[in-house]
Amino acid sequence: MILLYIILAIIAGLLFHGIHRKVIARIQTRPGPPIWQEFLHVMKFSFKQTWIPKTASKVLFVAIVPAVIAIWAGALYVLLTGGSLLIIFGVYLLHKITEHGLGLSSGSPYGKFGAIRSVLSAASEIPLIASIAGIYFITGSLMINDIVAYQAANGMLLITALPIALAMYVIILSKVPYSPFGIIEAKEIVSGNKTEHFGAFRAGLEIGFALKTFVLLAVFVTVFIGAMPFWMLLAATLILLMTMSFICALTPMLSPYDAVTIQIGVIIIVIVYMAFMAVFGGMP
Image 1 (tube, rainbow, N blue to C red):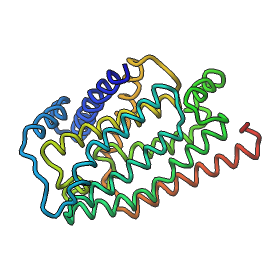
Image 2: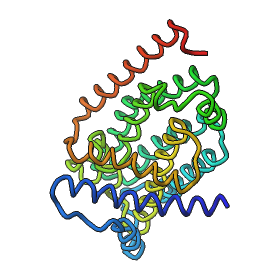
Image 3: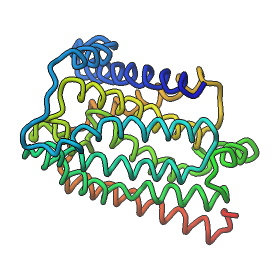
Image 4: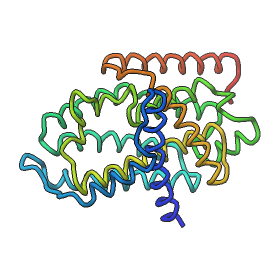
């Protein structure tokens, strides 16, 4: 059953990426590719010739691809079983390591620039820590089942803890394709840390990143809105992604400095909110 959900999540993630591109194109008055374009990309890369660059660290270059898929499949399992949000946070940290390793493994200067930027972006993604801390202070638990039960009794965290939801929203926004925070894959460094991964390796990465997108969106919906049937979860995650599509379409790529500065501002908002709630007795 879990395997079925993983397959459905991959299909949904690839379709979401296609819809995301289509919405961005329409907002920018372009026709855009068909929404199934990402499926075509995966099939295209799967049948292209695959080899490993001479400058690459062969073991790392190959192993990083199944690692990306495996960690997000594990995160989906945690979400479906109502496990700890802390484990999903750990998966996110592992993903940052894979981003860095992905860039360094090829030996390409473009990949190395992407790897360096992944370290810089990690410093700017502290809002995730603030979000998780805020959720614990409000609900008294990091178990997803407990958070869902808290919302059933006290209302959606999206309303009662809006600044914390905003911080998590910014984190997910930084991970969707064409994000203004997507400094790791900026055009001035070609494809960044993915530049030298092509053929079947790129197909595997696209599958892993599609799974990542769906899991992050689903975590946001579950944690800040509540539990729902799978088909409703698909609809809610798609609506959430489309709000991000508007931001991606209307906002230019930020410089690394600006990306860090904005996310530090989000951290300050969350800290002020948590201090306010603590002083006025809004936390358990």
